Image (cartoon, rainbow, N blue to C red; front, side):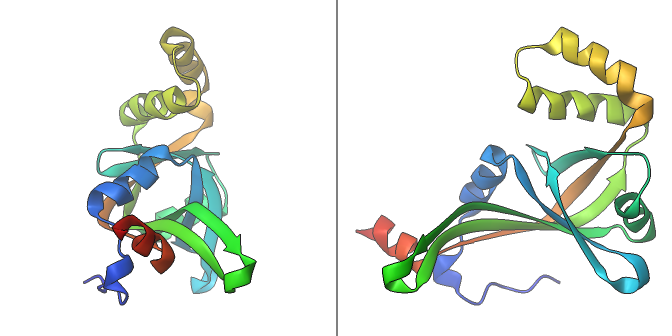
Length: 162
């Protein structure tokens, strides 16, 4: 169902791809927007096993797109270094594909705590109170990963093999 990577030598291992997701703080989610136009928007997130957790307002273009189609992709760029003398960039990025769904209240509560802990670690009690106070004002959704792929510049691949 998902295309194999054309430049297989540059493909990240699954562990390396997951590491990019684990350490990243933002990426771009791509959805099917109004009238079939792609809708891509930057988002903060947390990687949690085989899913990516997000939150947003209760309504808007993103929520409408999720309700209209449950297919999505999410891209995180870990490295993007311009190398002028070589007319290239040294890059490392990951794209996750999967099904996206809006969580019910109980799932949203737990997921929001996981998300919050990434951005404010060590404040579990305060976080729980904040989540509870704001749960009715936010939409929490997850991308269940079906396919994960990552790629890095050939120069980075070569540097690792030396």
